[in-house]
Image 1 (tube, rainbow, N blue to C red):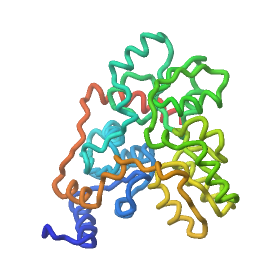
Image 2: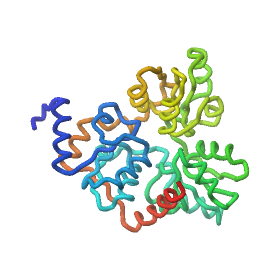
Image 3: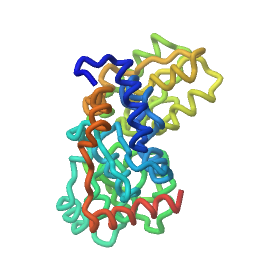
Length: 307
């Protein structure tokens, strides 16, 4: 193919390469619309990992960030997993490493560690069980201990603590830099502008923002709520990429972004060309050491068995 390949030619070439190489493309809900459109499956991080494990594809191109591609590899070690932009990371996941977690556990011995899926394979492997934003309450509730170490997101930890007052949640001081930027006064402003709108926010937002929302849920829960609701106007308090699916699936409804700050730089790194080149050259492969993979697999499987 010529280096001057057009977007339509690139799309056709991606389709051809998928068939030739028995490949599948997975994209997170926060990816740019062009990438979501070319993907075989679009969803949140857990759904992508689970769908990857079900497929008989030999190659998986994961359009998202590094920890998501690692999760796919953990659950599908026999498959070649490609991350089109290798340095697309997650600042929250980078806020704790395995040594910091070990020190955290020493300060609070004999307390189970619940690890948000937005974390590295090494950190998952040092934890007791994983969770996602959609199942965090169920996971923490399922534990017999009345104390829980929650890593790395203090905002999700705070949300869980409020829902489960019978448990003491000791959270690591990490956070999503995108959701954390949203200010509670932005909800006040948007409600004045769109008084009939329902405000739907992600629990990675601060407690002050969560308190003012009409609904709090994961990316997939926000999509489901807005789709099933009889209301016609919504303000969305999560990364702007989710607007593409919301508007596509609900053309009769209006969606507004809660804050201009809700843009994840890392999620927006991946372009259609990156996907094309990764698939064409089979480059940017994700490798997880087997010892680490086995440990992380245990925490993910423990979560999956509960949910």
